[in-house]
Amino acid sequence: MRLRMTAVQPNTDEFINYIMNKYHFEKKDMSDLVTVYDELMKNATPYAIYKINQWITGVKQIDDNQAALVVITLGKGVDVLQNTYTDDGKLQEAYMVECIANELLLRMYDEFNKAYSRLHRRYVAGYIFVGDEIPLSRMRELLVKVQERDLENYEIKSNEYGVITPQKTVVFYAMLSDNPTKACERICDKCTNLDCGYRTRSDNSKLNYGYQRIFGNS
Image (cartoon, rainbow, N blue to C red; front, side, top):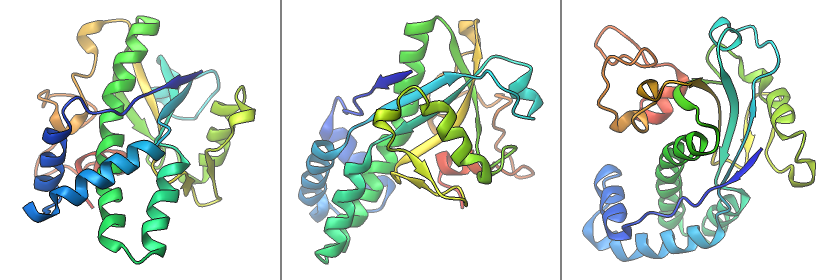
């Protein structure tokens, strides 16, 4: 199923200030950030495609429970915008696209979670990312599965190494629950549930590939 998303931030000033602080921009960069944000939103086509898991993945946690394969993307227009800035030698603006797009993509998890529960009365209780238990080499196969009913709009692709285009795209399994108390509060880097089984942040544990992308760890 294809789900249109907005990625629109209700308070642009607050969002830009957040970007400035998180990515260490200076006050003088604010005007350019607003301009790049406006251009990005004009070029973005945010949406999600998802399908309830109906095949064996080989990962017990997915196969034995309710799950949906999900793709969230900002669309190819963001890549075009970033490449245009780069080709024009506007490297600062190209980097701003990277930062803004990354943050929008993170916030789209929340948007998807809310939309999914509204449509299906099920709740996203956690994430399993391609690149962890499921190797990146299977990315192409999974993208074909999730887009098979939408072939006329087949724009999300992967090479044999699991590199996706458009670049601002994430692929994961959403673990589902019928119990609203099990639902994720919000995207992980703002979540207060430190006991969540899907991510434990301590000195003696390492975040997996997918959660590293959420938390910004390398």
